[in-house]
Length: 503
Image (cartoon, rainbow, N blue to C red; front, side, top):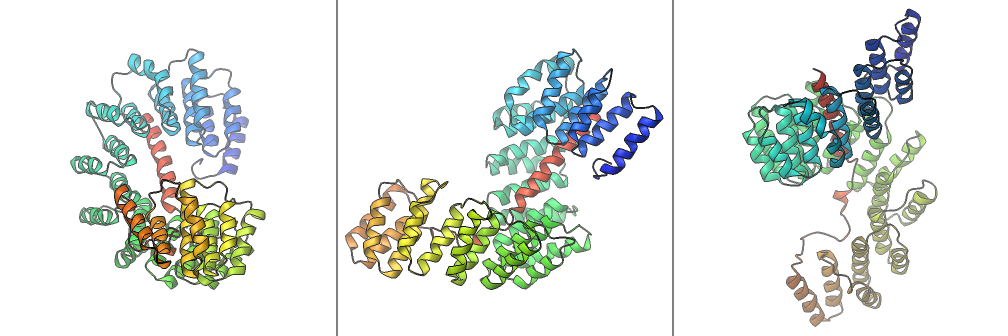
């Protein structure tokens, strides 16, 4: 009931319990506490708990686990501490729930408070061992995690997943893959964890290569797996594989929600199939949320369809969806790509003044690129000088973009002033160095060109072919669907840990 979001039905059951005289039954009350906590009605859950004249361990566990599932991690730890003060000894379920809260808070110090309970009460428990392993790994203590993993008298697939995730979180892909290959059993979660690790570190070919091995095992894909694979296909331009995954989604009745739709839109748009991306967008079930609208705005911008992107942005607002910072990256990129100066200027300032969104480096980059295209170099320079909430290293990329515009428009004088501004920075931005060298070359100052290139060589700065100091349109963000997927996966892991403790 709680997992299904049936709040009204839960209230009816509560009313029935009150009429029937079972309101103080420990198991009935603990079930109600858990249901209301799952529904996000934390205050109701706490009230039900506080009203009990005598609280059993079952009720304490219901409140703690409910708070963890409701992402009230500090509240869960506070309840555990209160329980300890009252002299009640925790059981395995209590400790797994409380340690799960520590994992989500990435707080290793809190674990020290609970160590005595584990040492005194439990010789070895697989659920507790797994959550401890997860805690060490997520806190970055990989040596401690590996020692714990190697010392476990028994392991299950959760143990292997937690240890592999620890390696992946720190970018140690080789060690993660070695451990993955040696795992005796692999479920869909473990496969997806390894696939996602490759995608997170831009190793898209490795991800698809691993998927080929996975498909030979005939393992059924889930929502998280298909989003991970679509992300890899999008970044490789692997249209054939992306279309296969789309067909798989249809044939296996995987619900095409906002996250999957956005991943499909990103894949098709990055493969240049903008009409297929539009078809996916039109087929989104129910009311389209802001992220769905953002995905299609950015997709159109990425494919050079500025007018359609701005039309979609207008429709988005008309239908009541609220644009966010990512939406405006797509809007400003569309204006820059389409040479829409007046629209770009209007949206840039509306973003802050009307929508209360502070510009980030991406927004500045798009607008400065637009100003540079029109030769409005002085306005661009003044804007860079007024930037706020932008790191020095990012400001350098803006100066690099303006340097490129100075070269195109033949403004050597401003270029010299910009060079003077940036020479004091210890920059390893190859795009910036190349812009400076090109500016000197345009002015015929070949000694300065050789000096800049010599500095690049001496400091190990390598030129990246085909790259600008400002992100290209193919890099326009869509949704960050992977982040949303990982958030949902994280909560599923919490739930699994809690369920494992009571099963």
